[in-house]
Image 1 (cartoon, rainbow, N blue to C red):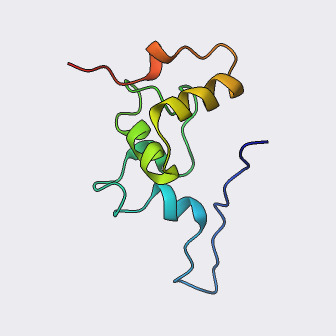
Image 2: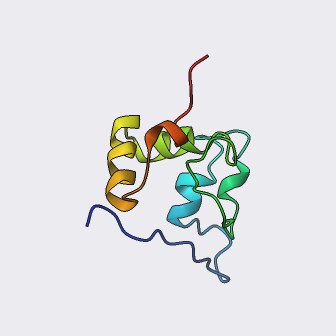
Length: 93
């Protein structure tokens, strides 16, 4: 397995606790302003990498995970066999 679920739990006894999800996807040093697509609970109905439904999400994923677009495309192709990069990657122009 190339990846696993990311912890989104909170610690009611420690207000300074920041889980991995917050560190990666709700971090203003990575994305300011924060991308609404990463607000918990996550929306259903569209893929997080759909630039029309979730503008800015791909850039946050690439930055937070320190990967390139080709890496993300390969991961999505393995995870979603019907994934087609032209539908989800940002278009230049």
